[in-house]
Image 1: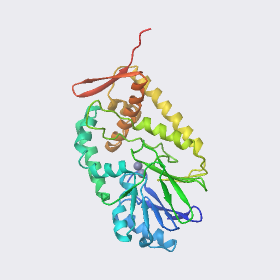
Image 2: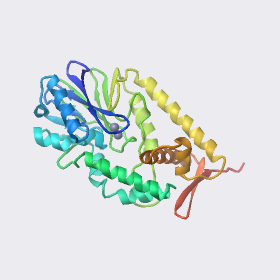
Image 3: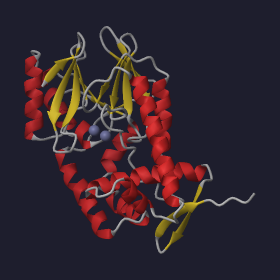
Image 4: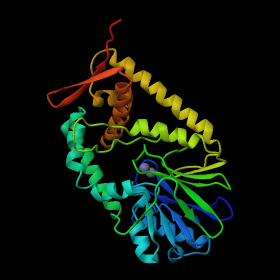
Length: 325
Ligand SMILES: [Zn+2]
Ligand SMILES: [Zn+2]
């Protein structure tokens, strides 16, 4: 389905076999004609994009540039196919480019991190299998150009700004069109759900750190300072009140932090146990997201010296910091 957002911008919804059901890609009908994100690489997805482009008098070959908000399969999956078909160059943040290229090789290390965070082996194996199979819905990128924070994305009559918003993913970038105060937010901000700051495989040197939630909250503040009249997210509907959405997310994280502290007051816990308390009965892949959420909070609480961590039998146990005086 294609929706006209403004005189030059069209939203095309593409199907994905995940709970969110669709990914939004945006086509900008001004030279160089640009596609923001691509959807996954499946027959249904490419057909939907083809139809969407036809509705506005274009074909896949009309694409002259591809911008990727972040390296999750539903956002870059068919970038390589579209690029070879149209000749359009691909632009992405260097951190995401590296992540996409190394993801398959880092699964062993990711597995060890999940086990260390207390997840049972059978569940970890299932989550890893899920990640592996979802990687089939896209091609790794080869040739790509890099966009960093503050870089300009020029068009014939306008210039967008690249805003680096690490958190949901370490190299996530938003695109800001100052004249219209429009922000393409990728998965940094979504209307119906709070985006997960996903646990990233840390540098393979102890002590392991998991900064994604902290970075995510800092990136929210960065967006809060912008004047935004319309926010175009990577999934779901457009958002016209960005400021109140950001406040809602901040309150939500504060509530979660307090919930975790209350849970820890009953004794030491692994991040997996905390994830199960926050999201009881979630399917295996979401266990990974739940642990991401838990360790994100624990990292912040550790920095504030409110919790401490101890390793025992290869697992991390967190407990409340008891202060004297
Ligand atoms: Zn994402
Ligand atoms: Zn997404």
